[in-house]
Length: 80
Image (tube, rainbow, N blue to C red; front, side):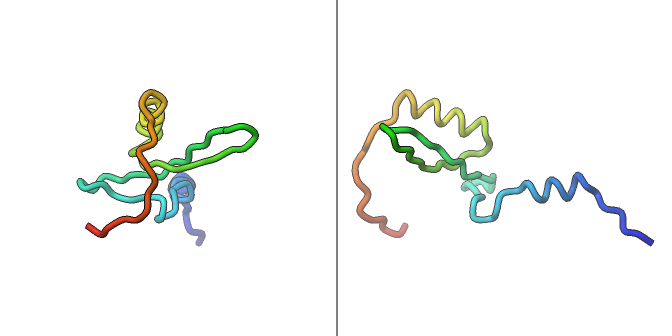
């Protein structure tokens, strides 16, 4: 007898991000890593941000367009 396979379940499982690209906020809600890129001259650069979903990521990018600033160079991080 053949095993019944739920293709939607398999597809959804395959479309999940790897564990290293998901973290939880202080309330246990998942945050996902999104990639940003920008052009400067003939080069392209990128960075990442953490957001709850694509809509949240787009809202953060919109806020960056309005108020992004350079606060300084990072030299190290002290453990909390």
